Length: 316
Image (cartoon, rainbow, N blue to C red; front, side, top):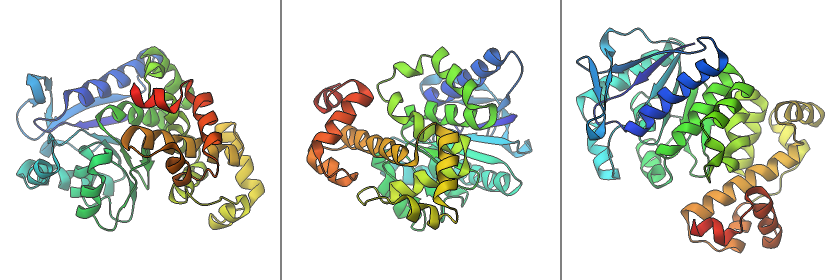
């Protein structure tokens, strides 16, 4: 699989390093070249990330898009700064190239402020997407027809992948690995890089790998997230997707080893953990938002899922 990594000046060095580490680790563990990559910049022979980090690169204007295009952050720390950054010539040039890449059949992916470059390419309209939680209102304001989801860690919609804050980039890379190199190799890579030691990783394992394993499972994730506070009926969910409850059950079990309703529970717990991280809502308020009538039931699931109480999760 041939990969383009778009790294504009002042992009985040963490995302650049994560991208290269994951791709290299996959190849090493597979003992074969699963991924072949190059870094692209607007001009010159090197990408200049923040803090003086540089990477050898080719010029974007001379590059023909490859199978997978990974877009790094735009290099802005505030919503106001991001709006200004999006008006710069290099962003406009990159946006045009990314749009052309998608039109030619490439898969495109970005996390954090890189998602806004996908917006500049015209690829977010009418799509599910996410970005770092505090920039979701800005994303929605700039692209009113997109379905920006603050609770989602990873989204995939018609060859466009998005992820949350900058360190969600590793979840994005593992999800892409699962899709294009297989779930087993993605899990091996996560273990090799000790990703499972991150406090946030366990909660995202199922949502992150859903789209990589089954398109119907990906639809289920989106369906549940849009209806977190409402009861979920298996037959109604299946009908909305043009299939039967039996087929839905079979596909979900094959993709995740979970029943559909157990998967629904996992997604709700995932959303509850996100709200614990990003809000000061009480546990009963969070339980109501994610579809648990009883906050004590949510408490028990959180402890079972993470090994920590909600108080411990918030204080870490």
